[in-house]
Amino acid sequence: MGKCLSYITANTDTEEQSFPVTKALNTHVEDLNLDVLLQKADRLRLEESSKMESFELLCDHKDKYRDEIEFIWRFARAYGDMYELSTNTQEKKHYANIGKTLGEKAITRAPMNGHCHLWYAILCGYVSEFEGLQNKINYGHRFKEHLDKAIQFLPEEPFLYYLKGRYCYTVSKLSWIEKKMAATLFGKIPSSTVEEALQNFLKVEELHPGFSKSNYMFLAKCYIDLEQTNDAVKFCDLAVLLPCVSREDREAQKEVKKISTFLKR
Image (cartoon, rainbow, N blue to C red):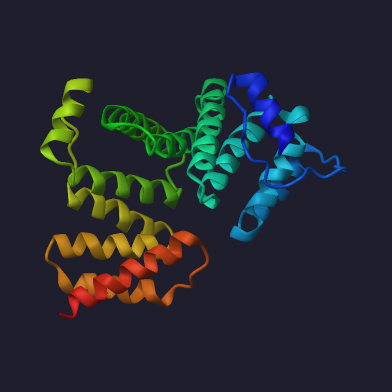
C-alpha cells in the first residue's frame, strides 16, 4: 500500500501524510503481463472479500503499467472499492480523492472509453460526500455528465442505468433551495421525475434480470411514490429472494423489510 501512496503523491500532488497503512506490502511480487494482471484483478473483485487483494495486486504493478489506460481506470475503480470497504471517514475521503484524480487522468487519456467515464463519475459522487452544498451540486452535475457519456459508449451495461436511476430518483426529491442553488451555478434547474427513475431501473431489469437487491428496492420505492402498491410488493418479494453478498445488499435488505412492513399496514 505504501507504494500506492508514493506513486499517487508523485503523480498527483495528493498528500499521503499520516494515512494509516492497513497491510504490509508483499516482499515478493509476481510479475504479470498486462492481460493476465487485468483478468486476475477483475476476477478477484467479483467477491467483496477479495476486493482489497485486487487493489493490492494493482498497487504492486503500477510502476510497470501506470500509462496503460486499461490499467488506469481499473486502478481508479479499485480506489472506489477501497472507499466502499472502509468504515473510517478520513480513509474514505483519501481513497475517493485519489480515485477521482486517477479518473481524471483516465478520461483525459481515453475520452472515448466508457469505463473511464463510469468510474470518474462514481468517484466524483464519492468525493461529493465530503463537500458542502455548492460543491455537492457541482459534483452532481459532473456525475451526470460523465454517466451520460459512459452510457453513450456502453449502452448495454446495466450498472449504468442503475446509477442513472438513482440520480433521477435523487433529483426528483431535491428541495426547492437545492434546485435554486443548482440553477444559480449552471443556469438551469436540474429536473427529473420518479417516472424517469423508474424507466432506468426497469432498463436494468431488462438487460440483467435479478441484477441486484438494490435495484429491486428502488423499483419498489418508485412504485410506492406512483401509488402502484401491487408492483411495489412484487419487487420487494423479488428483492428478498436474492442473496446478501455485499454491504450494499445488506443495507438494501433492511430497507426492503421496512418497505414491506409499510406496505402491509
